[in-house]
Image (tube, rainbow, N blue to C red; front, side, top):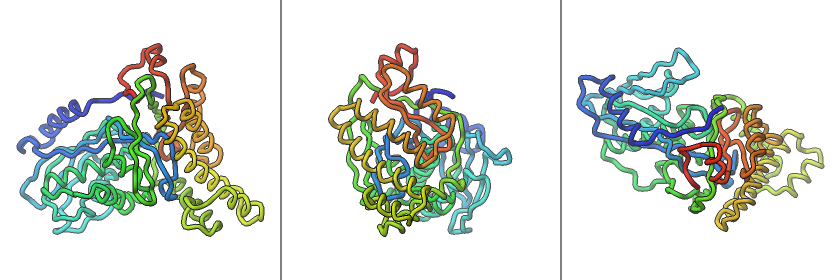
Length: 378
C-alpha cells in the first residue's frame, strides 16, 4: 500500500525525449505531443453507464504520447509503462495505417487502446514513430486507459493537423475505442473528464445529457489524498461486465430506460412483490442511492460543507462494499484505517473496484503532521 506521488508533466516529457532517442536513434527529435490526464472520481461510482451523475476531477498524473511523422504508412510505438500483468506483453508495437490495412484487436494489449483511437479517428492517419510514458498507475482506478486514449487522440490531432472542435465528440470517440478494441463497456465519465477537466474544479457530469457543471475546489485547508492499494484490477474482467448486465436487468424489471429513472419506492415495491432477487435489488439500490448522493455532494461542496461531503463519501464506500460488492479486503482496510485518523472527514474506494485506489478527504494539517508531501490542495 502506498501514497500516490506525482512526477511532473515537465519531467515526464523530458524523460520522453530521452526514451525516444533510445528507441528511435536514427530519427529526428519528436515535434508532436499529446497529453491525457488521469482522474479521481470523488463520488458517483458505477453510475455513468446507468445514465446517472458523477463528480470526478482531472489529476496532475498524465499519460503522454511523444513523436513525429515518419513519411511512411507504418506506425511504430514504444511504451515505457512496463508493469503489465502479462509477462509476454511487449513494450513495442508496429502496424500499418488503417487506409493500408484495417486495424484489429491483438497483442500487446496496451496497443489496442492506441489502435482503437486511430481506427475511430475521423481523418486519414499518417505513419509515425512515438513513445508513451505515464505517471498514472496502471489498473489503479485512476483511469490510465482513458488517459492513454486521450493522449493518443491529442497526438493524432497534432500529427494530422485535424483538431476536433467539439470536445465532447473527442471524449465519445475515445469511449468508442475502449468499447471496440479493449472490450470494456465503460461509461463516458473517464474520457469526459480527461478531455474536459478544469484546473481547480471537479465536474458534476450528467451522463445522460452530457451537460456538466464545474464545482470549485478552492478550500486550501482540505486535500483529497489518493492511496494505492497496489491491487491491480482489469475492467475487462467478467465482474465489471456482470455488474452492468445486472443493472440492465434491474432496469428491465422496473420498466425504466435506465436506473437513472428509477426510484427507491418503485424498487422496494418490485422487490417485495417477489419479482426481483436480492442480488439485483442490492445492485439497483446502490445505483439509485449513489446518484442521489452525488447530486447532494456537489451541492454541499459548492457551499463549502466539507463535513457533509465526507459523510457522503463514507456512505458511498459502504454501498459499494455491501450492495454493489466491488470493493476488496485491501481497499476496505485502507478506508477503515483512514477513517480512524483525526482530521479525516471521509474515505472511499474510487474507480471500478476490485483493487486500485482510495480517495480520502483530510485536513491539510494532518498531512503535515504525518510528513506527507507532494499532494495537491483541493
